[in-house]
Amino acid sequence: MSDIRAVKDALRRQHIETPSWAYGNSGTRFKVFPQRGVPRTPQEKIDDAAQVHKYTGVAPSVALHIPWDAVDDYAALAEYARERGVRIGAINSNVFQDEDYMLGSVTNPDPRVRRKALDHLLECVDIMDATGSRDLKLWFSDGTNYPGQDDIRARQDRLAEALSAVYERLGDDQRFLLEYKLFEPAFYVTDVPDWGTAYAHCVRLGPKAQVVVDTGHHAPGTNIEFIVAFLLREGRLGGFDFNSRFYADDDLMVGAADPFQLFRIMHEVVRAGGHEPEAGVAFMLDQCHNIEPKIQGQIRSVMNVQEATAKALLVDADALRKAQQDGDVLAANAVLMDAYNTDVRPLLAELREEMGLDPDPIAAYLRSGYLEKVVAERRGGTAAGWGA
Ligand code: LRH
Ligand code: MN
Ligand code: MN
Figure 1 (tube, helix red, strand yellow):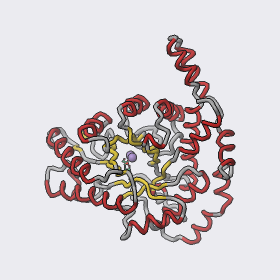
Figure 2 (tube, helix red, strand yellow):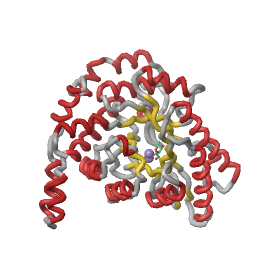
Figure 3 (spheres, helix red, strand yellow):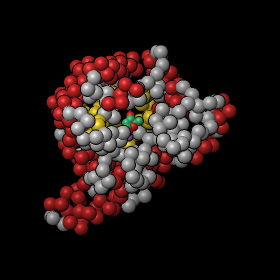
Figure 4 (cartoon, helix red, strand yellow):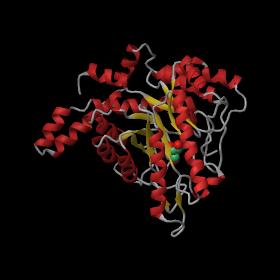
């Protein structure tokens, strides 16, 4: 797609969802460095998410993590978000922080714990009904640490049973997104360690079961764009949890560690039309800003996704196809590299102006004085829940 008008239109339509937990204090298991002005309530997290949307124009939804963002009235929370120009996006379940889950949640050998975990997942669907959310994101920390600790096959059976019960409960316009992760916190077996396992469970259930690719959840060197291409081809890519990693699940800003990988991923997305909203691919951020300012970090991350998408949209698809057909290895590679090496920042600045936004979202945000205002107003912000 090299018609600039069409590229801009596509960028205007691409929405990037920010996570509520990115706005709270976070850290590693060694230390959480608290920041001033962080939100104390889910409502204040929504206020911060609304800032990211205000300056980027393409981040109109915020994901919740339950129970980190527990409130009494979710319909009222959704209304609160709407009044601030955003909406509630994916509901992330949390079956990893109760003492009961030491040996697993939905794969736990104890049926009582499995029931408790399933009840939480079903409650998350109730919340989706109240917020109008489409997606339930399922990540299980379940697994074992030692060979022989539990029966690998039985755990798969228990997982399948829980997923099936959740699937049955989904409404017509709802889906679940099953997230895989290579390891951590389990260090020997992880029950959903890779895309193949997630995919197989989803295929058994039906189209409302989709795989979510968290870019930080693979072994080093994994070809993530291949996974993306495969899942898109099978109609099973429900979305992304974007972040960057240098080592393991680092949750750094997307596009910071390896912008070329992000471009390669977005190239496969664009190649399959997955950037169009109708394709149903959710572009979500899953990050923690442990040492950098949080709202600003989210704005930067949204811009990084946009830049990678813009470059992918600039790939000359006809020239690429021709070079591939001709078996011209270097010409084909050059087509991709030309797009990747294009400076798309002027194009995005222009697009923002056309959208009535400041061409430089970070400068505009910093000028607004929002951070100073919330630092003065908010005392004793909460932890994100994660790493705290
Ligand atoms: C697990 C994970 C998952 C959780 C989030 C906080 O590592 O990626 O998506 O919900 O982190
Ligand atoms: Mn994730
Ligand atoms: Mn993760």
